[in-house]
Image (cartoon, helix red, strand yellow):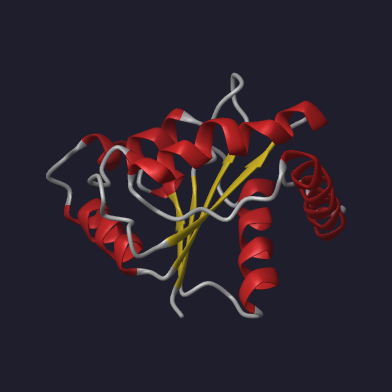
Length: 157
């Protein structure tokens, strides 16, 4: 099984990045085969002719499992992630199982993945794995606790 992690946090190697990789590891028992921190692509995400972005889109569409992660920003996922997701053609994720992951500063942000990010994956026809909202809140908090424990003293935000 090929696993791809795509993170749309404007901060490189953020807690969101850590959480997405932790989710991938907990689901599969191993590290992701492909890891994309979209901040590294920068302005290339705006260039529809950019080969590096096109190759990343193709690799994501060819994966079996996709972890898509973003911090909750202005009550939704980041524009950085939106720029990338807009590049994925409708139906391109039909054979990919998608797991939306969003981190926030408050427990109420735990609803954002189900309400905002999951429908984006559905537009690409990706079957989404998502817990019911109440269980999702607790899983969200457990994952955040793991990330905070791993992050203790590193200074990452």
